[in-house]
Length: 362
Image (tube, rainbow, N blue to C red; front, side, top):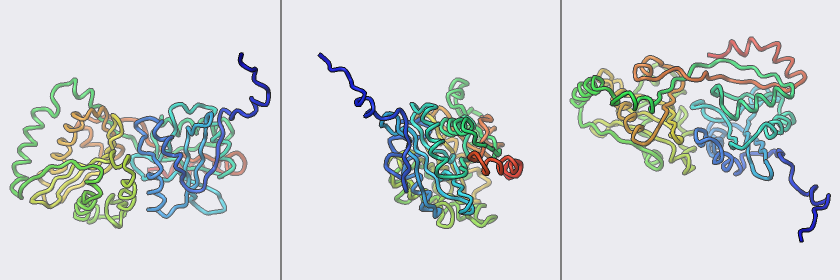
């Protein structure tokens, strides 16, 4: 016969949801990411560790548990003047600066997160993130329920290519596109032997990142800018991507298509493959062969491979909408930066400066 539970037995049960704060980036971030949407699976501990190391930040993390299981991980790092007690979610600018949450995390878990966050900071920046991002949207809603002010600034529209729809509309690429591509490829080959490769994981770490950096050093980004926005150079974001790739799970999601001509890197396209979603992070080419469209040739090969690999959506993010729409991409969710300001003086200041924040978007 089962013994009835006493009141003391009930008091020993864990609360439905509770939060704990950690200095640094705890290993608990990984199981949260593993139990979240496949599209957000790259938001692992090493993703945030790479960002804080590359950009000189000091992280702290809130972990929310649901019946003892971690369901939300919110890393944050200080930004702005110290007395203001402002923080931002760290990470790389693209594909987005978000944080992981398990698919079972409910409103109660995000309410607990918002309450814990109020003890840590006066304000939190989340972004850029997409409209409808599950974790960001849930935290924004929870913060508003507790009297926080949430201010958004528009960054850009995203552009998405529906690969599943492309399959139903006939051969991809179209015959006319293939004819043009063969013409360009024929002339490109006059510069030397063409080699088209797909790299991931260890291949990127063992020379792939360096090859893409060499292309960037020849490209317009080096010629027309100070190079800080380059993805793989030592003066750009190279440290971030190299450190992120030390996590074998993230490394397996990183993907590059690379064209070499007589063994010399000439064009690349770099993506993150997360489940059925491919995030297009960066592409570049050697201007010496620009008139033969090496980037376009390479990316069509990349898209055909994506189809074969079961990719359903190619997320091109923002910018350069012209060539994306020619390929078939359509406008997707807006990309925004959010500033959450806790009740009190921070919220009051936020209401007064709302217009300044919104006008500072791109």
